[in-house]
Image: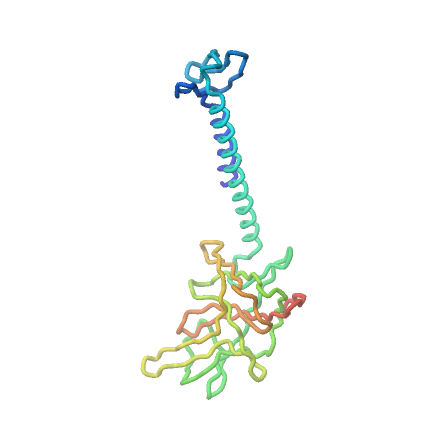
Length: 264
């Protein structure tokens, strides 16, 4: 569609540029498609009368005519350049979108390849023990304080870019972002959880990273990246509905200069 619009604009611009105003010194003008200065005469094609005519050169304001022609040409070239750049950006965006599968999940583009992160299995740790968090199951019983954890101490998804560009295809219209994980005795804490007995509310406290987000498609594909360079450590992309304890987690580690190693 953008290419069609650009082609139409160029055609229209050429058509409009073909007709110019031949200004006269009395303030009027003749609309012409072409003119030639021939000594003491200006030979021009009258658009109004569809025929060639002549007018004394001394009656024509050639400076104003030529100035407007040059100005219009410059304006058309600038607008065509803007549209061309927009067209190039649109094509680049579509190429980027085509690299991301439509299946829900988190992805990273590495050169010509696209890698999908495997969702991490997370557990809710209370003073009564640990239970696996089932995203689509009822909320597990949590009393007082708890933590959401990933059992492994390190992620196998290692990235070497301090501001990685990640893609998330949402499964539902939920909150999402990047959080910093806290290592703790062989596990990584995703968030702290507090239950309020009277209201039966769940207060979730992930350590969120400030990010930029750009929606790429209407059906929930977003590109996200940190506003500031990450500190070396463990992180995760998360998707959840606050207070529902249904967080999905895709973990990764940032190590400066590391060569990406896909998780097995």
